Image (cartoon, rainbow, N blue to C red; front, side):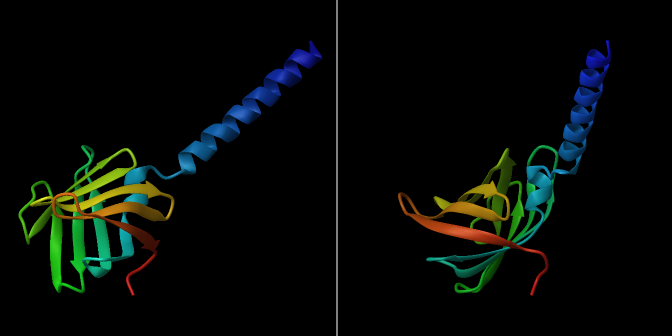
Length: 135
């Protein structure tokens, strides 16, 4: 009887520890919030600023392409030169700019890795690294 009680107590302790660690872990939408710095072929130094992720996965914020000198909003619909359609699905972040442009990225801890799309069939590798604050 004492062995069964000890096993039950140990099992409950392990379950409690497991549940508390899951509660602390951030979900992909929470992890995505903030500033991300990248350096791509087309844009050069690039700043992705994610301000919110809606329950359906729509992402809000902006993308600053310094080499080309423009800032695009992140929203629900792509408007070439103005807005990138931004959608998070699990750990996949798709930014569509129209005319076969945008980004296909995967979220892993403090990095977004994938490709910048610069037209039909043109895929340039890019890595964004998360920064805690804008500098």
